[in-house]
Length: 174
Image (cartoon, rainbow, N blue to C red):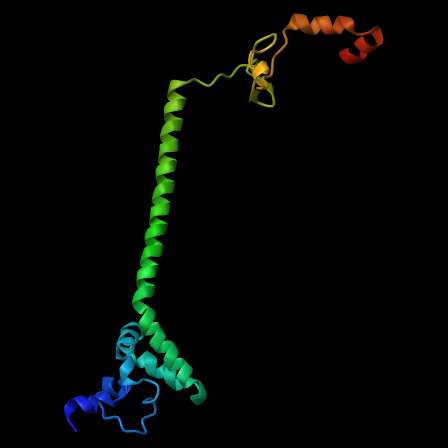
């Protein structure tokens, strides 16, 4: 038997331990030589001692499933790492976009605060701190369907009071 054929029958765990694998090897049936690439990837990600301890901790009837799981982790190892890298890159990009938006908004607020003084007068605040228009009469925006709050002057308030009967006038003064 030549050297190439001898390694073809050696199970992958025995090959890592540099020992001869005979037909009664405990792990020979689980780690066949045709799955060498998957096993090498699993070996890089998990390590030989971890693979051995996993296989020893599993019941004998579940060892085939454990071996398949280990080999599939080896096969997917590179894709998982690349997928995680892509996921983290997307997360970083998202945070950069949020930081740029916050920075732009803060710059806008600083500029607006310096350039436009905020009006703090009693006429500006009419209803719960909502700025209202301080004009009397019909608004030009009313015909366009826009609603504008209009303040009444003191003389218009007195006209309304005169229309009330004396009993209603006394109730409104209270």
